[in-house]
Image 1 (cartoon, rainbow, N blue to C red):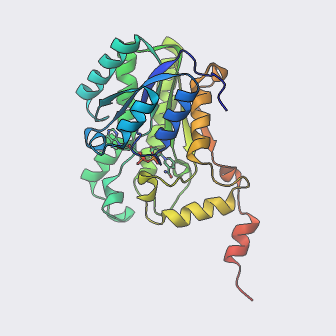
Image 2 (image 1 turned 180 degrees about the vertical axis):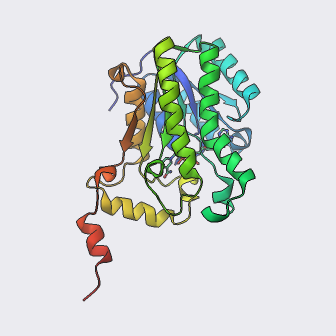
Length: 271
Ligand code: NAI
């Protein structure tokens, strides 16, 4: 069902890698709601090809940009300005930890990798906002959204240094949200999403168990990538006009739970 919630709106969507990506679902939903947008991803991700089809289907221009590289971001924003003038929304849907990829324990982190984790997964968000702010790229009442995970608030044993990256990401949303809101009435929020079966998600050790645990714990079950996309559409739309500097849980109720009957039963000693 489409409601025309983003009719006439334009923006930039990062992070669509394949049809499982949360950003992929966001692109499909934004397109259905009438938005026009640029799709962007790291050059290496574009070479994998799947995103070309998404661009064709949604009528989007595809621009490579490493989100940690200010020159790349500058070229991306030049292209957006040329196509749309000012834009209405930006999605940050980017995460990667070399420590997680290489299976480094949290008590044996490589600090070189840790810097990369922060740069890719969190500081890129500040860079995207700072450059947009300085160039006055986003219209008044525009909306910026980044994707986070509840490990920013609570310990999830295998989430490693992505934990601190998400805490930093959410903090950037609050602090930049203050400055952007005050100066230009631009809104900044994060969505804290359930475990979702994507390339980034499945890279975390023990992901399938975390997924099943969250599913058993959440009264509504895990939020899907489509559920997350619907919330992004709402946050990009005028319906959420005075929502800013918030972290919204897209998690089927998980964040309010202590323990559920299903988890009690799963860990009860068998008679
Ligand atoms: P995904 O693997 O489909 O998306 C991650 C994207 O980040 C990829 O498209 C990748 O190419 C891009 N990326 C990596 N380095 C980059 C760089 N230097 N410059 C530009 N792009 C770069 O996985 P998913 O799950 O859709 O991830 C999107 C966001 O959702 C991430 O921030 C992730 O942490 C977050 N998230 C994911 C959850 C999950 O369980 N899958 C749960 C909660 C949050």
